[in-house]
Image (cartoon, rainbow, N blue to C red; front, side, top):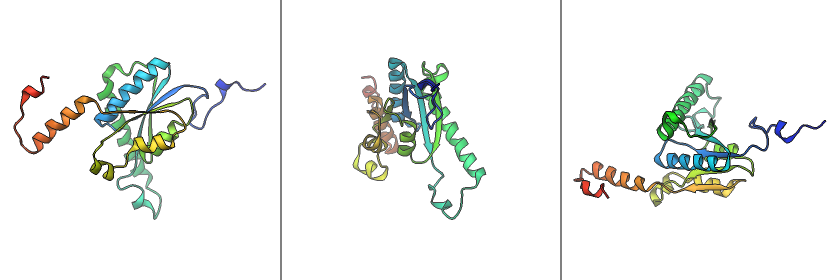
Length: 188
């Protein structure tokens, strides 16, 4: 007798046919906004939420090209990445959680590649923050959202930054330049 579709497993070890909403998490305000949107989409569609954080060794894999990364260092960096993911989830949802079934994944590699490995089914939905929009920032940090939109085999939802993000950045700039803060602007 042939196995049913529910009994088959994909390369990630999950049953085939399960709907997932995969959210890229870095801990930034933009990724937390995208994570909230992903939880909303998962609840709306009855899908499972996958919170994914990508990590690389400091300096990338360049220092280890002469040989493999020592396992103790790789384990320590992976542990730090796992802790960062848990802190981001706590900041986003608190102790109540997202209100939908959720998996936490930490993958080694660049964010775009790790996200595309996780969202590898046409039925998945990949949710990422749209990131910074300035020319200098785009030049310094390539856009994960653009990478995913160009290469994904599933729908990709890019979430713009929260309007509060702009207000937060304005206050931060004023603090850095030691400019007076007009609190009446914050009340609007």
